Image (cartoon, rainbow, N blue to C red; front, side):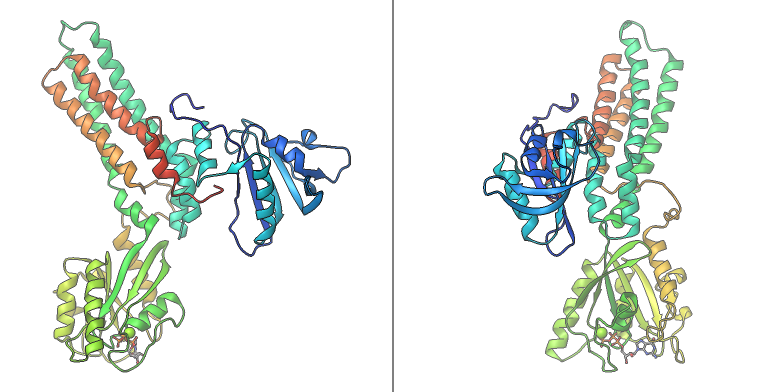
Length: 470
Ligand SMILES: Nc1nc2c(ncn2[C@@H]2O[C@H](COP(=O)(O)OP(=O)(O)OP(=O)(O)O)[C@@H](O)[C@H]2O)c(=O)[nH]1
Ligand SMILES: [Mg+2]
């Protein structure tokens, strides 16, 4: 058990199918815990005659068969590997059986392991054990599921950076700085009757302010990180016939939505996710917004407005081959308060509306001149979307970490508040014991991110989001 966490450690042997259920060439069944190798010994018959599991070199794959010793039947021909504590993912004795895939074989092998004393692993329990055994910290453990669930290359890159420990390292640097400041304050505790030397005070204040700037910079990356990790709800809106559905199809590179020359073609909304420059855009194509007597179309228009309201990003489509009318005006008014980009569409035909006409409503650099029919201007539109959502640095080339978890952001803010309280106490010339307390709380807040300070409740919440077998 990790000495720092004080979490109860469950000694059960756990087992699970680690690969996705369903059709597949190979499945991997995992088992972990003290005694797991003895279970493998009972069921794994190696092809090399006379050699058992004990002679297996850890981390090497061995060919053999899984045999159900109670019925003397062979379940499958497999490859098997064992790992010895502490050199395994969980830090415990582990084994992995690579069987044939599909529904039945892996399930039968798992059932056999359960019959011989293992219990089914809970979601994320292998990683929980890895964390409790100090194989990785909590921020790294959280990144494991982000790697599995990543929807875009950008999301994956951030998850991999966090898994490598880049965030933990940064938090560690902040912790070291606070510990330095704390050491200086504590050095004063022995001389309570004396005021702290003003030179020391100034140095501590300067160091703390520097740290506050760094923490604020990291905290401010959350908005971007959230977008990279979770994607962005995006509504495509515009008057009927502007080319919204054509644009959706262009972004998806497939004919998903019906396109026709009849205004009011899309009634219900259509949702699809597309990777735009590393960001998952959760696109909703909506009915053209206009005043209409058609009852069904009206329901669609209402829905479109609702979707636009709820969206984090709007792609407004304006038909440049027509003059701006009151329907366009309503949309242009609506996007003023939102994150929005504009596609000035149908650029392949003679324009009646130009970028100039739109200047009063939206910055020119948020307008892409497109032809959803020919597929031109789409790349420019994607660049505009990306720059609007993640503008600070070119993440594709940078190894800069951003915050992707609300939990981390809240902990950083808590730590910032404590550092601020420390500065206020220094300002009021409070006693060293008193001001040291705020520094310790600031340290604890950072410790929540990497998991030195945690509760069962927090762990439960984090690991319940994992899949079984991870
Ligand atoms: N010339 C030209 N025609 C386009 C372009 N984009 C769309 N169209 C045509 O405009 C018509 C309407 O396109 P849709 O994509 O169905 O338009 P919409 O905005 O989804 O329309 P509703 O669903 O009715 O609101 C179709 O005939 C398209 O082929 C374009 O860039 N250039
Ligand atoms: Mg449509």
